[in-house]
Image 1 (cartoon, rainbow, N blue to C red):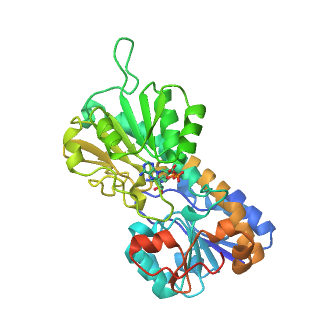
Image 2 (image 1 turned 60 degrees about the horizontal axis):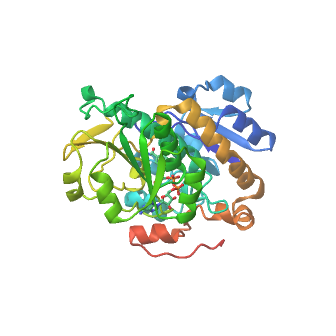
Image 3 (image 1 turned 180 degrees about the horizontal axis):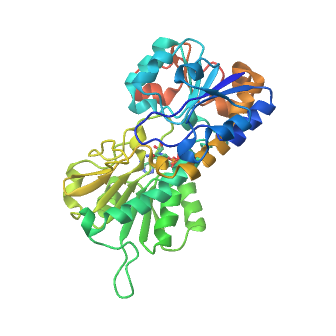
Length: 367
Ligand SMILES: NC(=O)c1ccc[n+]([C@@H]2O[C@H](COP(=O)([O-])OP(=O)(O)OC[C@H]3O[C@@H](n4cnc5c(N)ncnc54)[C@H](O)[C@@H]3O)[C@@H](O)[C@H]2O)c1
């Protein structure tokens, strides 16, 4: 199979979908890998490393998009829609629930849209997890930083000091991102509460995390109580494929201390605070109702050397299986991978996604 790796063009995006060692693995399997020049530069992979791994280097994005399958990091931007064509396999983060324009463009063009974030393995999301783990750890770094007075924050230090209580950190959702956020916040010495719906998950969190991490059923009442004392609120909920549940309304912010920080990791699925709107790494925060909001939708791009290795490590075996078996056989043989199918032959094939977009669900032909 011919596999294309374009350079990411989203603002401040620094990751690349495949490392040179990933390219070598695919080339050794008899596949042709076309990498756009400069694609790996910000992740520490110069063109020469790709060349030595057996990649064909392309001068222009167009050559890359002519491949049978294009693997990316972020969703295509409008200037990339010209490359869409029937039969093209696009394997990347799509996050279509928050992006109806892209969903329409994919449906109209006949592109096969396979989304990393809805691929499943034993009930977990193996291709979302590595980026969520990075975003979870980062949410505490960023939150702690913007709590500083010079950034407009309330001036509370996450871990406190002897004789002074630590900051109160509340985390909505205890999945991959929420767990790492809780671990990082606890490591700083903060007082941490994770609000979850899944009882088994809470049981796991209680056993796996330090004792200053508490779990709490995610109800409106409990959330109201948390908001009254929170210093740093981290949104990390997910229902795979669907738009993020709006858990915190603008009205609820009246109870929150001014200068507190909200980090909405779930912003890529539309965000779980009513006051959230996407921001970028070069202008990551804004203030709404006296609360600092950090809503960067590609947080892991801040640490591309770690993120690219983590992403490529997770996706490579799936890319290789699709390339070796052919798309349809891979879908039939790997039901977890078939869960990643969002768009096929001009139809929506993911139920929760279709529900969020208010469009017809046509069923997934491979499940
Ligand atoms: N902004 C970024 O750069 C970035 C990077 C990576 C991931 N993300 C996003 O982070 C979010 C979380 O991803 P994840 O991998 O941790 O997902 P996950 O599926 O591992 O965990 C989500 C958790 O949320 C819980 N949940 C669902 N509804 C809830 C509710 N109403 N109250 C409390 N808990 C609830 C689920 O039970 C689950 O445990 C996703 O939207 C993902 O796309 C964003």
